[in-house]
Every structure is written in structure tokens, then in C-alpha cells.
Length: 416
View 1 (cartoon, rainbow, N blue to C red):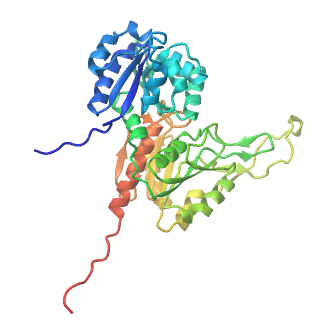
View 2 (spheres, rainbow, N blue to C red; view 1 turned 120 degrees about the horizontal axis):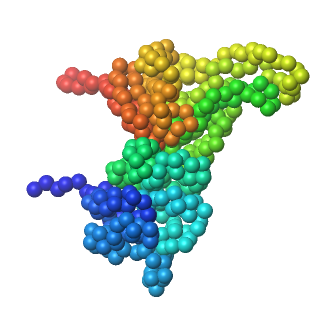
View 3 (cartoon, rainbow, N blue to C red; view 1 turned 30 degrees about the vertical axis):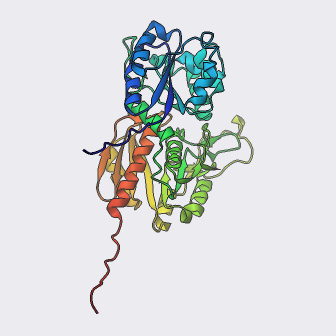
């Protein structure tokens, strides 16, 4: 009789935090999934969560007592013992209130107090109405948590409890499980690889105050750099100006102009075996940049522009064995323009996205793309979080390498 694969979370001790969202019922299925993967799970509920589902349900399934009251648990010091014994804390669903408390360090119940004593990975799967998720305060709390290393499994778009359609549904169980696996049992399939990533826009000065640029946020490039690093690669991120924090473990090279970005990438090209050009480099720059701020009285009625360097073409001309990946942000004829760029610039793989698709592209946390490689293969991906898409892009690069790898010369052995 054959032996099945070892569950991916075998031997792991997890804390599952459940907060007061209508999505609390989904935590039941997620608990079963974690246990099926071999984890021992202790459930901690907030008082509001018990309004949606009873603790008894989780106790029966987890075969562990449910913790919910800071004062009842005080004798056992569960706010200390549970996180100290845990390999990870997962909060699913995480309400806007829970995100705020976590980001600000507020501790008024057992679950939020545990977060202040914990040193293990924290994974949160938010669930709330779409307008709440896009609220600037909620976004600021989310970004603060991410900067400290928490993993946010972003909610999905669909019908909400309010009856509206929007992004606020708790992520599917498998997506949350993938985030847990990534933290506790990461795939290190890029170990030994050297990856050079560009990200963000460039700023081309008109004067010391004003510049020509574009709407790139840098989120796609930063997601790729983070994914490659987590999968074992040595990563250098060359980034134009963004509001993002560099991913942990990634060498960060800040630049401002297209010229600076080109020089930084070209000098590092011999070091890299993979170059992923996710930056949105400005196509034009002012022909002259004023040394002082231009005043209205100067009556500048036109702006003379000149093309910037085509960094991707320069990289392609100088590459040797590197895999070179480009991006194509288009507004029409997506595949035609992407194929033209793929062949004209002699690159290996191009990631094409239509920036007019709602919720996709610049400034969004999501992207919907088509990948085209030099062998003629095309693969489309639905709208998904950029961090998940980053892994898909890395997987496609690996697949392309296998397809195009030259076989080793065959030995001519035999009798002489």
C-alpha cells in the first residue's frame, strides 16, 4: 500500500483568530482545511465573532478549547502561552476594526493582546464592505502592517452582505492556505538564482519642482522582487520614486530618472541571470531642464520633449545567457502590440496588461495579464493580486527555461 504525500503543515501549531464579520462562518471550512494539512489549531474568537457563530463549533472540530476572554484566560496566561507556542497566527476573517487595532497596537481583548506578545508570522485575511476596504484609513493600516512583515491576503471582488458588488469578500481558503505555506514551508526553487528587477516610474525634471512621469506605483515590480527573494533568489531591486518600502532581504537601489535607471541596470546585467523590467520608464523627458523654478510670468506655453533611452533594447543588445522579461502596458490591441514589442526588442518573455481593465494595472493591487514568450506560447491570467501574479510570472520563467534549455552534448563513448 502506497504512502500519500506528507501534509504541508504537519507538526505546525497555529492560532486561528476569528473576528466579527459575516464571513466568520467561512472560518469553519478553513479550520478543517488547516487540520487536513496536519496542523494543530487553537481558535481565538473576539466577542463580536461569537454573535455570528458559536465557539462550540470550533471546539468540536479543532478538539481544542476556544479562547475568547482575556480575563477568563488570565490564570493560564493564554495571551502569552498561545503565541509563544504558535508557528503562525492567522486572522480570518479580519475586520476593519481588527486591522486598526493590529496596526496601532491597541490591546483590549485576548486576540489583540496576543499580537503584541507574538514573534511568529502574522497572516490576515480581511473581510468587509468594499467601501470600507478602499477607505484611506483602512489602506493606511493595511500598509503599516505589511511594512512590519504581516501578510495580507487581500479580499476578493463579488457580491457583498450589503447586496452590492465590490472588493471585500474574504479570500478563498486555498489562497489563505497558500500564504500560510509560503511563510511556514516556503518553496525555495529559485535558490542560487540572481534576479535583477526594475520597478516604479521615472521622474524627468522640468525644473526643480515639476517633472514628467506616469502613474506607475511600483507595486508589480516590488511584488516580483519579494516573491523571488522568498523563493530563495538573490535579488537587486532598482526602483524609481514610489511610496513603497523595499521588501525584506532585497538589495535596494533607488533612482530617479530614466538615465539613472538605465545605468544602474546595465552595470548589474553581467551579475544577473534573470532580468525583469517591470518599471514604467518615461518615454520622453524635457529637452531642457530649468535650474530654477519656472514662474507664471515666464510664460512657458509649450514644453519641448525628447525621447529617453530605451533601456529594454539596451539590455537585450548586451545580454548573454540572461532571461530577459519585459512589460507592456497597453490601452488597445493588447496582443498585437505585445507581440510586436516581444520580437522588436528580442526579449524572452513579455507581460502584457490592458490598463483600461477595471481594477487592474497602475496604482491597483491587482493585475490581469497575458504572458507571451519567444517560443510562441501565450497564457492568460484572470484578475488577481499582484503578489500572486508575481509567483505565476516566476513559474512561467522557469517553464520557459526548461523548454529552451540546450541539451548537453552526447558522449561518443564505445570501443576505440
